[in-house]
Image (cartoon, rainbow, N blue to C red; front, side, top):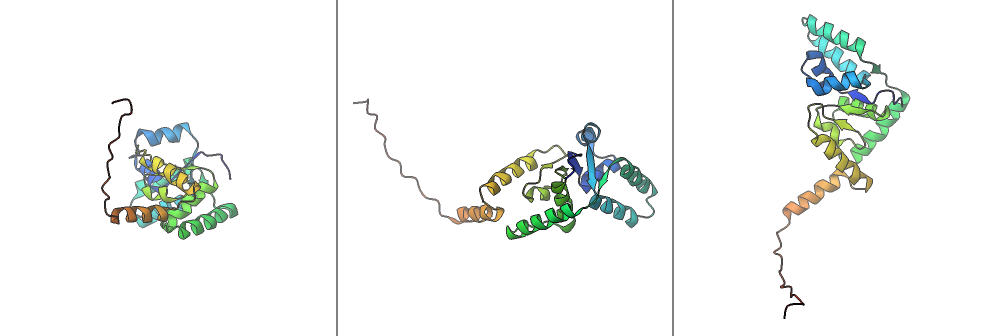
Length: 184
């Protein structure tokens, strides 16, 4: 684990920066803190360029971005974190797209907070996610999931409890008059 870069950009954050649609919060993170990308994000960006061979400005912008932002390689440690995390998530019934899971586990292995507007990442146990669009909901939801996981409660347990609660018949509360002992 490097710990050199506190933040790793997901593909949607990198794409927004490249296209100039990121807003001040993400740009501030880029200039004030160490940010990196996963080699998986690099691959996705390069794929996007290859899909549009006529988009020469996009190709130049991606090339400039990749020269400025470090791309961290996958290592054996990253592969171990991936295997462990995927096993845990599958056993809890949590699904994530293949590329997103690769990026998420890379951020975990590097001890980075993942910068993304994709709420799917909040399902990954232990992953710190910062929504660069300004919403704090994803970070708060992740904290709740982490606390539940620490208590041995899975996402599936919560879903089952919610389903059970929704199917239960409402029970009328019995009210008892409480006598005031001082009043006679």
